[in-house]
Length: 237
Image 1 (tube, rainbow, N blue to C red):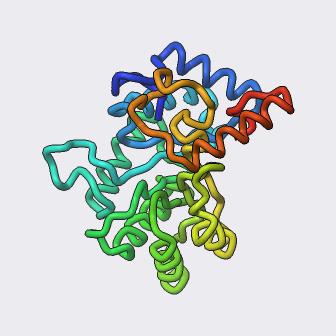
Image 2: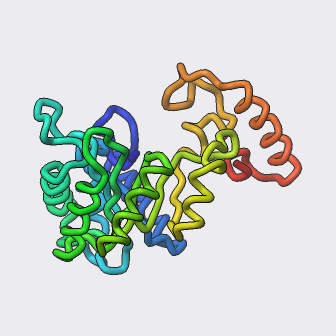
């Protein structure tokens, strides 16, 4: 999400390239972006960087969020939004397929079976190898995969959620569900927008965000452990 500076923050092309090269140098091969990240420049940069060795990378992107604020058909989980978004993503990524396509977040307007059916079409066409779901309640994911199993459609194989040491709500339902359904888990927000690094508010992306009592107590313990281990607070988090 921070590849590209189209939103007024993030890494420009040169810095993004250095981050990518460092990632690959230590064995990294999974890249996760989205159709709307930094107004499309994230996908453009990622597509450029992986072009020479596309098949060596596991490339993931997302659809749901709007790519045109003036067009009601340009966002949501419905079939038209999916097809339109994916075709644009493939062009920006310079590839004819993505390894993983995420449904970016739950859309209470589109029936989940419509989304699952539309995603299955893209898998059968070879434009998507596997599908995942992000930012959705456990019951939606379970319902979707039950329908997929019964009807022979492609089930969700991965779950993406915010999860960190100061915000452990996913442990109640989402993580047990993922384990029971065999879903891979990719967490985001593991540093809680920078709060769990311990750096001052003025250096965080959203300095106006308040630190909850829970996060404050957790941060104190993280800093103590970091000092004992001669590590950074972010590494402990």
